[in-house]
Length: 168
Length: 168
Image (tube, rainbow over all chains, first blue to last red):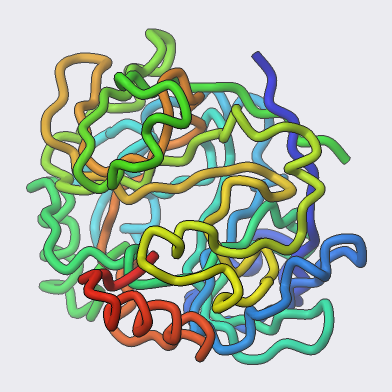
């Protein structure tokens, strides 16, 4: 069974690849340029402060789609050795290499001009195809949730190392 | 440009279609049965209380993918007339008919046994193809967010009609 999707627009940023790695995407601003044929779908979107942006991680090679276990490599930025982090399933992490490389960012909508949404906090590269946009509404927010021990240990170790993170 | 995805599993519930409409999905329990070839991707998932479940809305007909403006029909359940709600873009709502019919539910993980995730709160029908699972982690939660006036008006009107909702 194949499911066929098509871009509704593209991300436009100064970052096309690896050089973006060292910058926290949370602070990066980018444009989402919606294709002309889908612009009517934006009517009424102004006023949402945050959007869920779904995109296709187009730089993931086909062998990346076969990867089922990964280590959260980002933790090396927070002073952890890879020996300190477990090998876990891709469905426990936000790693780009996964069977269906769909990315999701909760991005802040700063402004819109016609077909362009100017957002902050999208974890995507230049020319990333955008698949869908949904509003961040109350139902998306879970007041109380739990994390596994291995996940909490990574956050606690990073914080002990002086990195003021709440997630990774 | 076509993007080709493939199911990693399927939703199993007693509800195959329209008869589910009158039940609030938030209270419904369902199984997600992951295909054998992707089970390794679940390792470490136990302990997350909530998961982001991405699925393909397989019942949306092809003409539904061309719909760009919709009215939130669900509000009629809350005592509003359709004349009271605006026609807005699909990217402002969670309506299933949209260019790429991807659904997202924040579901509660009640238990896992091997390839079966038993969840509560998935807004999907029986045999819905699941595309991806990501953990609900701190980065997914926006503490402070804003909604447009039209959206707040719908919630306020429903509440004035005696429906204790926070979203629709």
